[in-house]
Amino acid sequence: MQRATDKTLKTFALLILMLGLMVACNSEKEKQAHVHDEYTCPMHPQITQDKPGTCPICGMDLVKKSGTGQPVAVSEEMKDLIKPTNSSVISTIETIQPERKTLPVNITAAGVINYDTRKTYSVPVRFGGRIERLYLKYNYQPVRKGQVIMEIYSPELITAQRELLYVVSQHKEHIEIIESAKQKLQLLGLTNDQIENIIKTGKETFALPVLSPYSGYILEATATLPESSTSNSTASSMGGSGMNKKAGGAMSGGTQSSNSMNAANPSLVMGGQFSVREGMYLATGQSLFKVVDGTRLWAEVYFPAKEGAQIEKGEQIELHVKGSQKAIHAKVDFIQPFFSEGKQFLQVRSYIDVDKNEIRVGQLLTAHVVQAHDQALWIPKKAILDLGVQQIVFIKEKGTYTPFKVKTGLEADGWVEITEGLTESADVAANAQYMIDSESFIKVINP
Image (tube, rainbow, N blue to C red):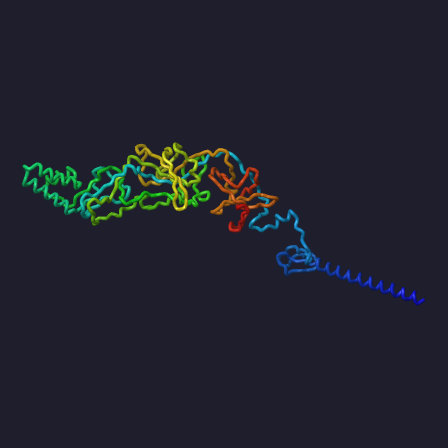
């Protein structure tokens, strides 16, 4: 009887223990269920409640909070969606693929009308003195042979004139002495007409005129030719990236790139005034001016190295001189690469027939060269985002767009040549401007 009672007590105790465990488990489940059933607003996390609903502040649907300590599984599809916004963009924008084709490219660059440096003549002063009158006002002013450039007062010249007048008046029979006095004046720069006029009037000239020995354009001896530098562009940015490139076909018009012409002395291009002034003293043999032959001029055009790389000697070039409606058709006669201010340029020179074209030294111009690039890779210009130092396209991969750096070439009719960074099979966002909020947030993957 005692043994049966012990067995009953043990069974009863076991049942009580099992009941306690069941109560504890249910309590834990209710606690977890209470945590999982908490809802909050994504925009206003201070709003919480134990059932679904809407946010009283913004009206958004409440979402269930995740349980603390519960791991979130990241699938392969989610990996692309949770990348940083500066390295990946989620969008359904239209895509295009690069096309390999041939397009005519109209390369545009700025230039200036210049003279043939091989036909430059110096105008030295053969006697010292003071400038009494100066008849020239600015560089590149046209002059004729025999035109008065300036008048100079020279004690040395007055003495030589008085010697001639004395010999003529006192020793008319001494022809050799008279000729020697005349020759002295000739060596000082006087012409035969000036000498005969002195003898005829019997008076010396205090301010003797200095005549131009050549016809052409007058220029200060210390003046330098304007040289181009971009930039810009300009080109910087000159172009595409600051470059002034225009598409094939239309050969009229065209604007000058701001970075394309950076003159060493802009006043010379526009005919700046002389630094020589009336009242200045000159030394014997000093050269103040030089005359350049105006019958042989050329156009100097400055292309950025990338644009002008394909230009060859003998190629046709069309020139539009500023202020003239007539286009000048010429050919490339000389090509010279040079380096200036950290940028590479290509100087293209074309000789111009002055008799058929009314042009002057110092006039600005715009040049057009049409070329066809065979089987190059092209994409629309709007598909490229230009950051200044690099060009970016957005390539679609697994539903997201990733920025990639590319290298560009020429532009033609709204298309840009891709020289590096893309293949024909790449899916590129059709409009790169729609992919970002700010250029500074872009982080490219490829170096």
